[in-house]
Image (cartoon, rainbow, N blue to C red; front, top):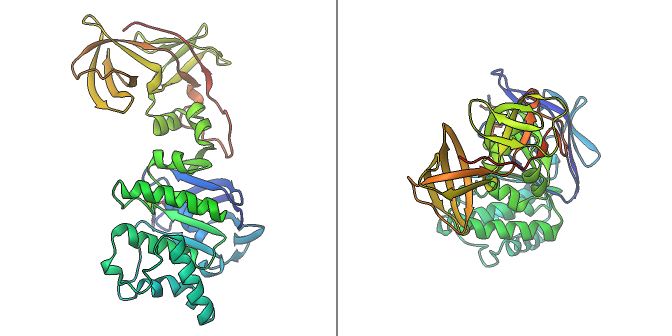
Length: 371
Ligand code: ADP
Ligand code: MG
């Protein structure tokens, strides 16, 4: 197995579009890293740069200690010892399952007896032991994706790269494959980079999650740290459905602009002034009150209670309730117990270089306001 390092990697497409902008990222040997970000944020570009299908226009890519791209070096994909699985299982329909899985070994001129042994082993790993001679057309989508995974693993790669590998599958199959993938890669001690647009999947699977936007890494952290200490309002909103509110800090409190919302900051930002508050849904408390200033606009069932959208004097807040599901149209009172406050100068525009800890988030405040 091996670590993967991106050292100041930038990639500009010929069209002039920025694919990656000055990305620094190290994935440790045996680590499972998930890469999330909105569509077009550069996830696939990053993965393909590691795989060797794209060459960075600046910076270096290393696998283990070896430079595979940059500094005048470019190692082609077939010599990087990586396995890759895409969203659309690229399984050749005119070949049997076994022949599909065997392909990377044929290319590497592995002797026939050894090939057979390793194909059986790889099919076994993905739970397709007796499917060697099957026609791929007779398999389900999930089974075909397993074939793609077996083919990625058969040459015993140092790193496994997954680009939306589970995204085309329907639940509950997807959930099952997610569990299997986690167990399998942890058992093998594989270094994994898993690209997904599904943030809950990223948080569930990964040792660390990297959040990408516009070709830049905004934050790399453990799932718990990302949820507790998002480095920017963007990350708070992207991962946790935080409501972002513009305002200012004065006397240790955050005050929303033109709105009654006010939250006491426990740690005061160094300078009072313009600020942006990220309010996480669990910090928004909602009580039924016929005279309340807020109204429930949406109420989705969750096992714990409800996922609400509440409109309060022009501010639309996401709330998560426990043990209670309000109805759409209910009048409510809103109490915001905490918010992470960011100086406006740092909000959204200042992506930190990875890896990054607490960053610019200042304080979780406790305050209240009746709405
Ligand atoms: P993601 O996988 O996060 O959706 P991509 O890495 O595919 O994002 O794309 C990042 C940016 O690069 C987007 O703006 C996209 O339009 C652009 N892009 C991707 N592939 C190409 C290409 N072959 N030529 C030009 N621009 C591209
Ligand atoms: Mg993509």
